[in-house]
Image 1 (cartoon, rainbow, N blue to C red):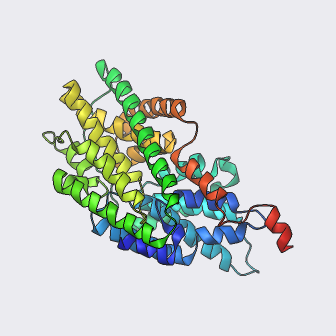
Image 2: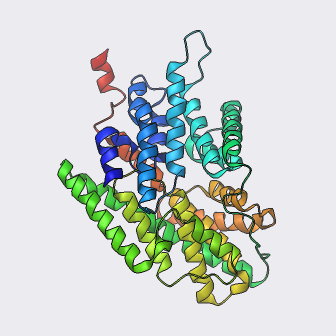
Image 3: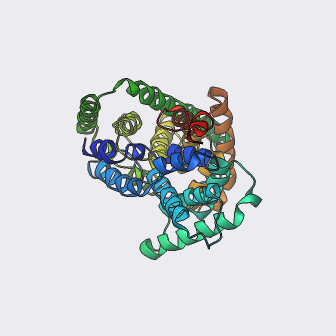
Length: 380
């Protein structure tokens, strides 16, 4: 409730992940009335409210990640700097600033510079690298160095043992990628339906009651399923990948699946990158138990992580490179690429657009933002 109230009271555009807001800001940049729209999505207030709201959710055990918020925060910082650059200083294109900011945010959040670059090209920019390579590389390098300055040189997950993909393992990887991508699609579809339904809640009291209700539902879920349901899920991933005897209960996958949905739709600030990876990890462990192949446990878990995230984001290169950099398992790069390829094929069959693309469309249609032509004429 507190996380929702902070967003509702001080910065409504700080809710949720933050990636759709940055994508909408990139869309608005360069338009004649674009600066005002970008400012609503990426401003100083967003920086502080996003931090406080997401930390509040995490302190309450919310099943959200810091990656989406970090991306919006970074985009807001870059946009603020862009606005206050003096006239005598050569101005960088606003769109390039926002794309570079998003890449820097992801690089800092996961300590994955390559993931930041690929995310910018694949999801934020959807354009050629030549148009933005200098700004992009500079932003990612500085963000990565800053992250390492405070946190040291670290791997987000570590370096688990991953068996080779040979023989029947290839079949297991392919089957896992199909199932995990489907559940990633299902996860994003449920989220979208509830987010769009929530628009019927017009009054502050209704929204407040919804936030409290989601808090109670989440607390009830945790009461019956345990602490493995709370947080971003990093501890669950690490335990599964590094403890060969570790396994999940039958309810861990569905509880993490719905815990992330419940937390996200409460209205506070929080991302779904890390939760998507942890949901994928628990799904992978369920598949290992179902097939009875403990010798391929880590291979299947990593495959499920990549495929589930791809099913949500439709960003296969970002997904497999993030996991590659988090685990430092370069010997598993081909299995990761195969998982991403199969996952994006399944995801595209189920829906042409990603979760973020559909949320961006909602932002662009919102009456809170000025359309391109009509209102411009009125202003002129």
